[in-house]
Image 1 (cartoon, rainbow, N blue to C red):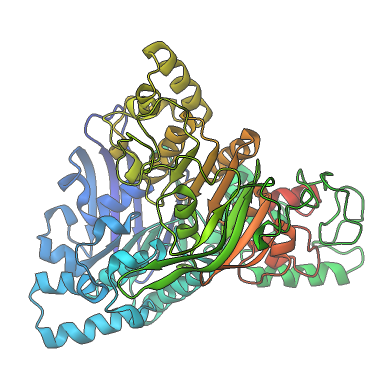
Image 2: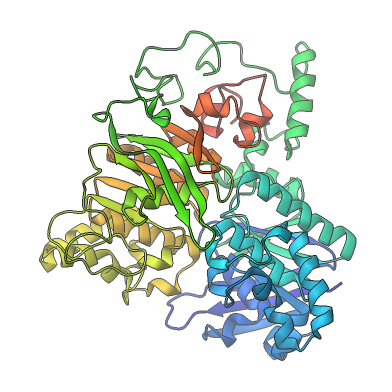
Length: 596
């Protein structure tokens, strides 16, 4: 059981004009679960790096103030002492992995510490069991999805039984069921073993009801610290966009609810108490729920800013019943095999993307979502079935004649505008230039655009994505969310006809997600988004494809899919199920009078 102490901590990255952290002080008692909450670039990841000793030892820069883990400074500990005291899971699990198989990867730290093989065996087995990977011990790490790799990184951090565990957005690539399992694992580590947990996360709706303390960071400063309910109430008044969604259901005079169970209890009380206090269903005036009778005509607005019913032919796209004229690109009975065991990542899958619509792919980790995107991007060959749709013959990234692509990139040297652009889960795969400005201008320069035109387009796109202050910086010096926005902007510059995005909201704060969603909807492009961010899907997707075991098992509008799904539904849809089934996200709740 170790205490974490931070006193007057300031840190500035090499070459940065402003400090990433400014005079931060806080104490995390032993056995406490602290959530770091704040906008992208607010300093959450930097604080974790200072706690781990990575700053300034690995990243350079200048640091002032003091950090203590169990009374000792991480910056002064030996490497062995840091490993034994502090477990770390960073945003990019791929960057932490060095061995080919899962078991060897988890054992790596123990090997470096000289742990005897007999002890190593049971420790690895226990760590894998804790994160639900016992049956994956012999699997190649490269064959795992991003979410499973994140769990491997967690097991590797736990295997040496540290006193403090630092986690940087550990659920960013994990499906809702796996995320709940992860939170349960962390709760047991805190309750049963006294582990001190310090964690950053953007998807906070299911966390405020579990953690002990919340620290809110803004522009490198600690602006609020306290119990979750107090912080949620403060955010609701001062920065409502960052407040947990469930906390927005009650006015400032009431204590915020933080769990689905609390919301449903208050709703029952409010509905029973005629005229009494508490949340009651709207009187019927204003926007109506999408789950009721009387569906509007095709294309009509439902009162929430979205169509109540998909356009003609759209609902059948997931089942392959559209004509190819409606489908920009699709697959019919597609089969994809991954060696060495020829596992079917896609198993006679039929799915399509309707032209000009935003389609979301949801489902468990390893369901086949990323594989489907890679097939449409032309990066993954089919072992069976066929491509369909008007873009099936488009030059995909990686297949275009004369192209010179970096790993995973979706930009080519040839002059014609890009027809297909692909964003992989890790935005680092797209970033190779020395500055953000050069990164955004690369596609245009490869297409032969002049410097004046290149700068004009780069400046316009940078403003649209809110990254113009980042233009002179090196992409690798940015936070995870900032790198994601740079990668998205780099694809937008090329004006692709088909945009394929794998976890594009990873690392983005609520305001940035809103900006991305509005841009996707306004662009008029055909878009596919594979994501576990169900709130984003509910607000901005036209269609949803639920993928499982290599097949599309459910498809339709967000209302249709989330009206049937249980776990794979936004937190508000779960909380208001049976009461207001048409409310899926915060925008719905505000429009219908359920939230402020």
